Length: 343
Ligand SMILES: [Zn+2]
Image 1: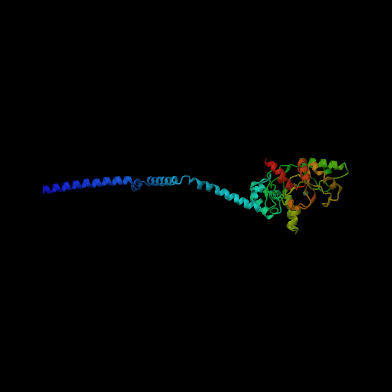
Image 2: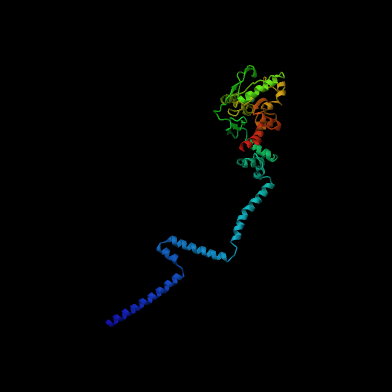
């Protein structure tokens, strides 16, 4: 029995050594296969395993790329070039059909980037208009109907302020005014008020005309925003068509008469055309700083019928510019005054 026991022990010992040898051989193989990632995963170390796999993938890609020499650089260059090429092609296509509004309009000094899509749309709707007209019209707001796009005025104290159907004074706006002496006012029209700059200019103009036997008087000057709104509402309530009312009476906040810079120089019944006074001031008012604000045939821009009696004070320099240009104040404002204000 002892002999048998010893033999079995000896056998087990050799068998264990044999197993150990196999194990060592296997470990060597595992190492050679670089299975650390797998081992890590078994250990629960997923990050290490993932990193290892990623490293392997990168190493593999590197190996592949080196076999193609400069191949990977070329496709990248192509990728960068392609969008540019597409863009150029697009521009060429648009330019040839007149749709490339951006670059065409942006050359103008009064181009506004925020209006880019409106220029494009308006230009397409009006193929006969040149770039200057498209940009000017859109800057005025004419791509919208009157009162269709209203901005609140910020520079309400400027002598050059643009008040119209697209530009509204703040509801609480009240200018500083001074009273015109009675001799400057049309009889029976009550007290008249203007801003100091306009009042002084009006007095000078009146006095100079008087030397020639003419009598230019103020028939209507400052009107408050609530008063104007009431006038407009009364006109609407009288049964007149709103479009007709709008062509003569502005809505509250949209009248130049709120600024104290506008004066109606009507003698009576709003007819001045056949008066000597009109013949005198139509080509002289600008020397005093006034413009005929709503010229004949410009209703589509100003929104008002011809009003030869309505003078607006803008200062002699601007008035001269507007008079000589033959432009409406809207056009002059967006193409000459506004760009200089931004600079
Ligand atoms: Zn007026």
